[in-house]
Length: 242
Image (cartoon, rainbow, N blue to C red):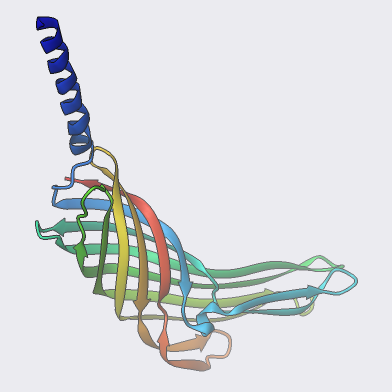
């Protein structure tokens, strides 16, 4: 009888440990998180998205080249958040988005290079969001959604280097501009081990800008009114809760 009681107590103790482990390894009650995320970004505006087309003649030289815009790119962000017991939270982020459309060509048969290098670098030193985290039963995954505002600083550059003869020629258009933008976000975090979280985030940014671009060769200006330099980004990363 005593042996059975001891066995029963041992089994109950083991069950208690098994049930307690998820609570210890996957805590959900810590208000602060800091994290880093990275992923890809796609601009919404067709002027920024641009196009890329290169065809070659029988001698192997590019005879039809059309490269414009910046194409897809990448985004990285650092973040810190504070979550209230009711699930509402403030999220502060800083990071950068880089769009780049580049081609390195060779003008056969003489082997002279031709380079197209278009890039739009956007830094957001601060973006603030008001989000709500949904703490669900029977799962350690915590989805969230929200919206916010950010300050963005961008550098726009399009460059073409080629040899019309024996001398290298370069044409470039560039500008710098800053402005405010709005964004909506949705994502989730899921505990990996103790206070380490896996995070995923989908974000749409709307950054209206009046962009004036100067041609570095002849000094002429090109103006884009109400150009949205934002778009969609999808990022994955890690965070630490405390």
